[in-house]
Picture 1 (cartoon, rainbow, N blue to C red):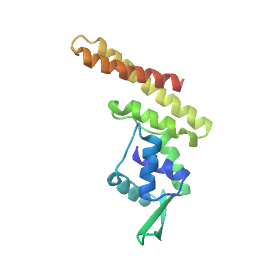
Picture 2: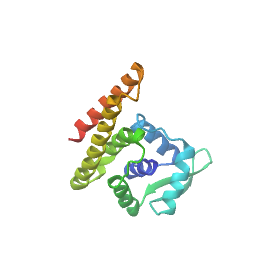
Picture 3: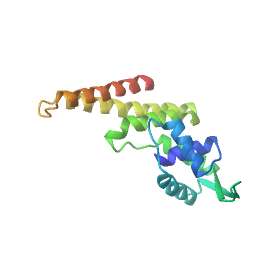
Picture 4: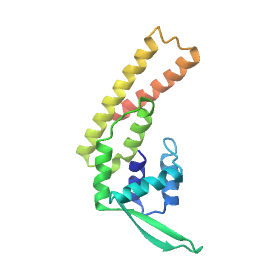
Length: 164
């Protein structure tokens, strides 16, 4: 998901690693707050894939600074990464769906429709899993655990509504 966030930010702005981090925190603080230790290797990976390029400049303070920008291939890679995102970790599904919805403005209408269908199906499966877990008498959840799961179920319902 970090690749998507970085490329999305760079599709809007040319930015240094620090600016990328700041913009991700501002725009996606509810879903992701990556460290520079996460962003830097991702930028190197994206650079090796020819998704981003940089220009080195001396800053006003005399430090060498790299300003990154997305390439034409990076734009295509970003769209593909969004459209073909695979949900692997159930605990992150609602978070990842939220991010994908937020970055879907770069997609054309057909791509956005497909993304929303994929996300909706994933959310409906997650909702079924949550309901099954709550109804399973062998789970023996405490009242607090049930309340937390029900709160998560409410978020799932909200996301389903947005996607429909």
